[in-house]
Image (cartoon, rainbow, N blue to C red; front, side, top):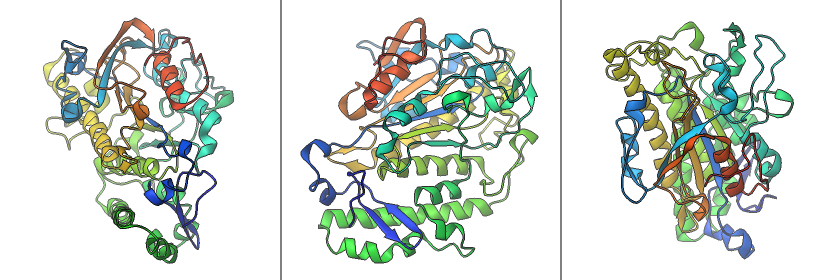
Length: 430
């Protein structure tokens, strides 16, 4: 067993692969007491095209709780883990038209430049601000994920690059997102040998000798955890391969397929959330952003009952009941994917707590009612306790048009970043 320079995790080595391992008691016992507490992680999942307000809004209850709405029904089993936030907005998006002026600055709190060309302008997003400060503690400072490729054209005077990126670095640079699960898997395991091998050896084969040597020196509980982890990694490898071979769904031109992207969108999202959970469990990274689809996505949600048609068209429902019904069902489907990620994180035990307990997991959209492109009262969920620093399971109502950067500032502080300001906020929520 090898302790990496990051100090908290063991890893296995093989020819062309490095396999980070989950929290093991044998590793924790060798660390100084101050380092034994599991680290805090954060992930921000963003969905396009807003929500139907009347399907999203929960019912407030005494004591700061809430009853989930139609769209929030999937979080009911984890209501004690998830808070619903209201009253937040990005004030810097008020003057911008359409979708792109809202999603690109969601995590920056800045006003973007209206341009269809190369002269993009935005601020640094909160995830990259955190990665600059603390990302060096893990193998990968951060992960930027998505499901759709970018087609750089102009729409309403804005580059569609704005609509496909939520992570932004210094000098207004959009951070390239990974949309291919296999490439993400290879990156996480540094599996250069597998990436170049048409036969695709399993990463478990490459590290088998080191794994056997480690298992022989572990206690019963750690050995069982190692076996369970190896089985889950192999199952994930097989699912990635199977998803790539499945028949392709019908997509719009904006959602054109890319080599290695799973044919089935639901499978694609599930694989990405599995990889997020794996990245957090192995401490490969502690910072993730995931754009589930590019803004203005016209993806066909026929796989959801009652939703045959384009998502963007449904979001412009014009008050028509049949469109509103499909819109709210798609909103609920997104919450289902979020709830599934929470379940995956809750299943990982570490140091007497769960991975979910030690995380901050956000689900958000950059606008409220897509029919009006409403920038006020953004739909936002926050799960996890940040290692005990956050009280979860609340309805957190802020005054109207409180800067959403107040949330990002609070999360940065709970993550360990020493700052008293972010974007247009100097007061931390949480």
